[in-house]
Length: 399
Image (cartoon, rainbow, N blue to C red):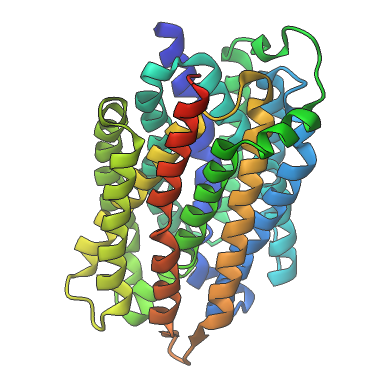
């Protein structure tokens, strides 16, 4: 149990850097717009560049990730992620910023796949919901500590400073993980198999493709709105820029506490119940926030609760995903799933950018249409989760 806790902590630290590297760019969107002459309604393109690069690298590296010690592969990807993040701080215009985000995304996508594979390798199925809840708490910690700190550093110093800070922390945690994680070669035992053949076989498995389809639905619905959230809060709802960090901090604290309860809850009630609850919450909050004008509840209520329901959707899905592939192709499957995730987020961010317009004062027009499409796609997720559960029961998947 002690080694399990140490592994969860280290993987969570890796995920913290990976998630923060991605998350901080969206709240900094208005700052980047002013500094680099980036149109407010095109902020989603920067996020889309990261996710598209992560998708391409996920597909390209899928047949390779399960052929190496997971510790070494993770350290390599994280080091490249840190380099790409530092390059973001050196950007001088939209083009160079996008190039830097492509470098970071190409490394960040496989890093996430390897991190989740390590958890599935080390933690048995009966404790995996709790473990996934703890690892995904990195999202909340990034919201509580990382994003507010990045926003404050950018306000006090310069928009470049958060990129340099996250890159430095990334290198530090990469070294710690490489030193402290044990060798992870259990998936290499036995006869060497052809990874592509195994993946093609999984592609014909109903549990595999419905699980990946769930990833697409969750990601697309989320990223129709997430890249534009900071701008919408500031310009449409008149939330002060100086208080943006505190908003992310409160939301992160509450979602972190919720995840500590949701993980064990999944182990007791199952992923479907939590997926349904999270989706209903997302539909209600999305309608109240974006479709209603003005929203019936204040921003400081809507934002934290939205973070909680999105965390519920994601932790339920990741727990289910850990049961789909066998250990020998776990990283490869997670890499392909990550590619679908990033393609979905890139498509959503870029579609939202095409649908939105920004007024001279920065306000976003047509956010209600964007949110309506997101909510329709989100409603598909519980149906896909239920289908995956039925398929897993039929083939007796347990680990």
